Image (cartoon, rainbow, N blue to C red; front, side, top):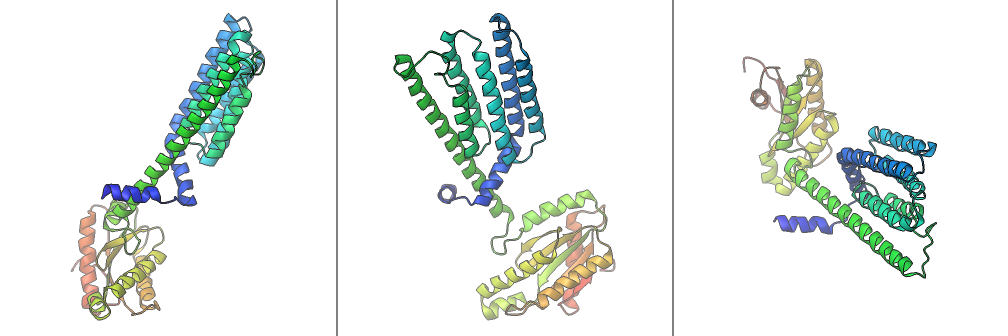
Length: 359
């Protein structure tokens, strides 16, 4: 079962909206890692700059201070960046600045040592780049920028005609291909895992027929909101009147359509409140921040919308409305709402009933 579902997910092409959601989710999850990469990159560049400046006799110039300020500024901006598309641009700027700084530092060491350090710098930058949550255009632009800034044939006295030059070209092609392949494969695997997780979550928390939250999802949301202790909490339990008669007369396919229609009416008028299908023909809504009169208006309007729905066959609903006290559990509130629902059914259906202590 698991293998079949996983293979089905992998064969499907993720829509653009899901890809955008995946990129944002990945960036938010990896923000601490991105800050760590930026900080460690600055530290490594600073240590190498100090070694070349003092042991190499080049001196620590104002350019070094300028690059440190730029890199630290970009790292601070990253701390306040929450959108993945903004990070794509920010990372590209960081790569351009740090590779230019590396180039200027490496220019201060002997010519014979420059090719090795340039290629080592490219390898380090590309490896770190392949781990960051950036889009493809940003990744390949950063790769081109890195090779342009750290070109091992510039100011190194090496030509393509030499053996060392041919080996450098071969290594550059191999490194670029390997990093690109690793980056693309990791992105693809992460996207599939994200997609697969969403499919499993949807199956666990979304009702497959009506496409609204199921009982598990509703109970989880309602419990969370119950703990928030916002004043004016009410629980409404909804039941479709004579639903068994609809199934017996018109068939279960028509019954399923009725469930969908009622679910759509609930969704349309629920606002930001928690709602869901409890099972069968029962639904529930958890209201917050309402006076009793406003709660009664909401459920009365819901009864009217379902009654006036043009779909066939016409159906009505009954609703039990119960106040949720701050010191009681959700189970207790459900029992009260169910008692009120029984009263609505007993008094004629197609209406709501408010729970009262005598019930």
